[in-house]
Image (cartoon, rainbow, N blue to C red; front, side, top):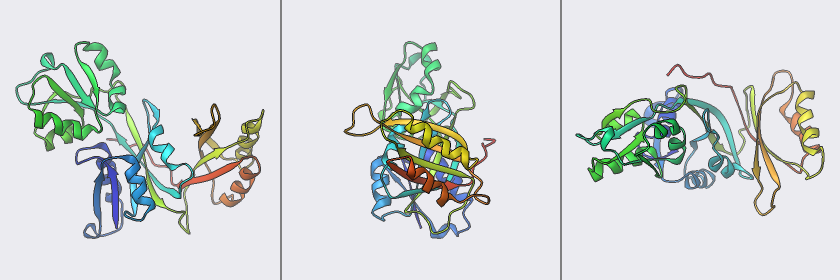
Length: 281
């Protein structure tokens, strides 16, 4: 079984993957874990069968939905079978002999930089520089050996790439957490769990979204999130990512889908899985 994530060792996605693997009832020798450079390549290889599952971030407790990943799922044959929460504890990492006072540039993924906005407000001499990945930023700092640049990444990345901790836990929200999906290609024959994920598109008419959302009430499904995303090549028209809790023992997912399809132009069941508990670190 081949499982993939975006990034290199030390990335938060790798941590999510490791947490997932710990819960699998399979021999570790039968698992192959591989990192990818981009989210699109990750999803493409899931769709073409090069990997069996991918672990991909979909939401952060500080910055909300991760649109650049969720948008890759629309109109694609993917299905979420599990969610994983990972605490995000950003660490400022530099080379040996560096210090906070000497740092002029901090490299990290744009999401990570946004999650530490208060830190940059308190250190106005530092420039936040977008990089493709948190762990790759740490590797770059190691290779450059420049005491004026630092990386914002996990403590594990610092250990892997022999960097010094200049300051720990610099995220704005101390309980900063990222949620990941485990995705497979196609909907499994048997699905279970009390949480459903959808992508829907409704008619651009008054009340169309309201009518669709009322169908969840009929099935006593509790709406957990609703996020609008622009539809490509349809200016100012929007699709919606929806998550809801659902009693699959009481009601049929197929019946709910049938009802939703009556009030939407397009309905995609993105996943069904058991709601995960927030981690204790």
